[in-house]
Image (cartoon, rainbow, N blue to C red; front, top):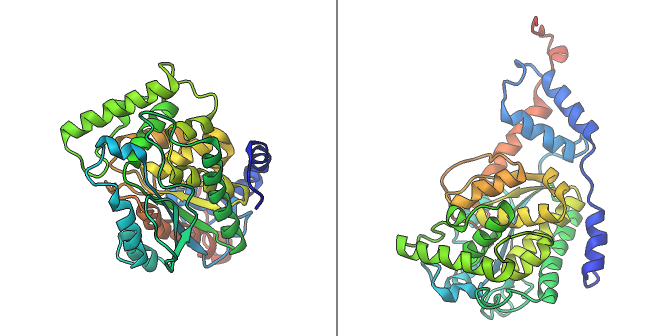
Length: 360
């Protein structure tokens, strides 16, 4: 892919189109003719109908599933907003590569191809098998004092996500989950959430890695100060990419690119937790049609997550009080989506089964 600039990005975004509503209508008609009372499969019917519409009426089976985990460090970690040191980002990436993390277990179990991407970890990994090295720089700058990224760095990180979507399309992946790893990234996600939803920092900032009450108070103050510094008191969002550049993260930027790219290729995407959903919300702010391709894997324990889901107009498939990240909640939602599609494609209709329809 040619190095992207603002003009090329706009051209790319213009290629995103919503699924044809004809397919959604046909899917709902088919669901109503299956051997069951109308609507009796509840939200599974909505999930199936949306996936079938994305698939243009012909969902491939079995699904070709994948999960992308994007890793980067955050300069804001220097402000003591996490219970863990930033070295944990590097250590967890190594754990992913050794297949010892939760996402490894779940990806294997649900047969989702796992890709680990270094977008900006503050460590030199060398040429490690299984790691996709796309490092833009060694972590963002400290957004408490300056913008997290330059425009060029942000665009390079966005391009990484767009290229991952190219790869997903080339490999005929039909359902992808998007996760992350990065100490300090819940602080960035909290600031993004407050700006996009208009909620106060205290309402959207949570414990992240498990900080205590005193550290949480400090974290809220940091988020508020960051927003005031970069966006002023009005918090008006005229350019979501400028918000991303100022208070985002390299892995968040790459996820924004992946959400945009997947939508362009009409690939169904599952958001994971708070940070993944913050990236999806930024992608939606850039191009609202992105929402047509999104499924919310779960609602995490982080308080800001529900505000993001409301902003996106999505209802979570699962609510398990998780706050791990890594794509775990998104992958856990995959078998629910698969079940919905399998019911759609394999159940008999009233006509084919010779079953009488309801007398309404």
